[in-house]
Length: 464
Image: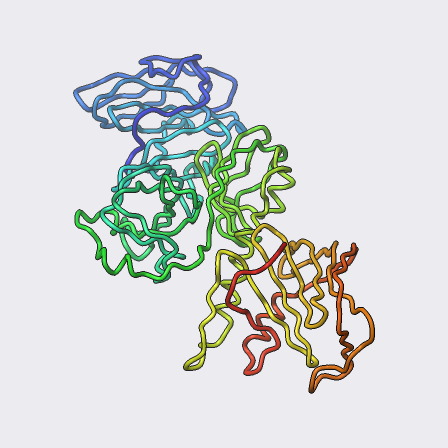
């Protein structure tokens, strides 16, 4: 038998209303309509004899306590018998005139009769990883449901200064956690190449910023400080993920996916009426924790349809979306030439210039969803909001300002044709009802060229 599950199994009971293990019970185990009389006898310390009618099974189990009759899968008529020991279990089901053992996965189990078994496995760092299994009554046996991330929900002090990485294994630092601040561990991503290895998705407790980053598990296990000097000198970049913390109710059932792909496997399906926790977001996808402590990804659009009370919430998170757009832009750009300033994504927003046909348009994107489009002449500006749909930035422009010429026109600036200038100007403001789009994939392709039309500019965008 594989390593058995531990502690108490919360399950659908058929013999009694109590989950306490008993030495005797009556239940229809094989689904033929006849109830079998079930008895458990301790034959010697650490050994037992289980009987169900004429079917008998014997085995070893430390501290035998009793049995529980349960229904792992209420879609069939069968019932299973769980033998309780001290910190271990053994599971049996009736097959004809014999009791067949069903190997249990490792960990502390829980079940609810829907064919799903959850097992909590103790981890090195003092928390329990929740594994999910599907029960196949025809085999019988359990099939593991793969998960990319596991819920942690733990607070602990860091061992000195610890960098929070932008992505698992990255050298880019999004924040520093020092000895005076506790770490909030939200999730764990295992490293398949290292036993007990992996990364924690974490934030810094007590800070107003909700920046999240990744910390290698081996760093948290160190008893000595990391190189504080090197950490304090690290260049901080924009994060990939921001914390959310919202706890809405599910209005319409929807799935949580293993990864940020629409074709990814389902980790869990959320039940209508249950409460979930939004752990993190990149602006397009949200990391969601279910009531059963399973976590997976859902698109922002899925959340808007499936969750209640989100009308006033910032879903999707524009700041996270703008951070993602900037990081993609930086990754697409070639390395800067010698002596030229290197542009880096900024938390304040993005200034993007578009030079074409001897003119220049400047986009000011701000993390609160506002946008200002500046033109080369007459101090002409258009104001509005931006939204992101896939790779398309949609601009809804509602206001304009400019300087209108007054009096006699004067000649255009040297080298500029078709531009009228005036000796005096007066400010003008008006309303707009204009929509524009900007394809971000085209922008990314353009900046790869030796002489691109689009260029990001250092500075703070103006969106008022």
